Image 1 (cartoon, helix red, strand yellow):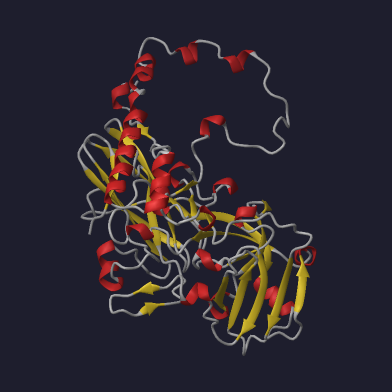
Image 2 (tube, rainbow, N blue to C red):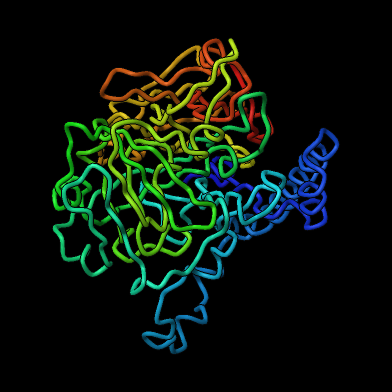
Length: 451
């Protein structure tokens, strides 16, 4: 039998490491170097507490017998809970720390902020509905589906207003796609800013969406697709979110969706209706969708002329750069976690591309000097997350862990240096650079930028 000291054990990243007082201070006064220091101090204190209680239980398990095996447990000798005790199931109480979290100081008000998906605790490729990331511009609503309407107008022969019942009687499809906010990893453009993968990459989720194909809906209304090259999507929230959609690039796979992972959309994800535009930044996946207008030119609405633009090194604005390029990240081990022993580890992560399928992921343990090809786990779907795994035996030496993805167009995920050479450092959008995790000899994993 393998000795306990040789077992590869990993401590999860601490979830609660920011006090409410510090959150209030950051929200009121911003995130300066002093408050960054308090964040780091709080994180390291929480990390130390997470590892403190691990030795004793393992010592018991290493003795002559483990009570957890030798003795009957309560659940083996008593009657369990009835069926339908919880008519809508919820996670175990032992998973209560795995939740969406808001990053303090990101926005002035929480109604126009982000709640990040805990990627470090997920398996496979599908994001549970309750953990799907949130991004709102004026809060979310519970909208009555009986009174919700969708208007289709513009360059169409038959402008129409659809009820939800009208839409759900049309031919529907179910497809799995990722959605990523254009600002995902945006805090890392300048330098390392946040400690864990939940905050570096957590504006990312992947679900099965069900709805009517946009093409079917436009055909129903007699859209002029010779003159009409663009579509304006308008949301029903108080911010008046509107986005221009390039019909030529997205007509064939865009969905007007009402379902996510087999159930109706959650209110915070657009219930009862949202647009699903595979491969395109999440802001174009307009929630609480109320209007689609076909036109012959971009609208340059406030959400695309003032917001979601990028300042290039020469002073120009990069506008309508909506495709989410090929990207990947190692989620285990990742920032904030700790390896307690030398030995075997399964290194796992996610890869995705807004242009198609992932064809390959390479992993480096020495900062990009040498690369090994990881296993791509099925299913490998277009414009969807692909899970990758690779075996690794840690010898106790410091390491820099990286992943580099390639898609079926031949695009290869760039280093942060390569990306900055083209785009500068003043952007917050479309950062698809290689993520680096630094592993110290004491097993602690931290966020670092290399190359």
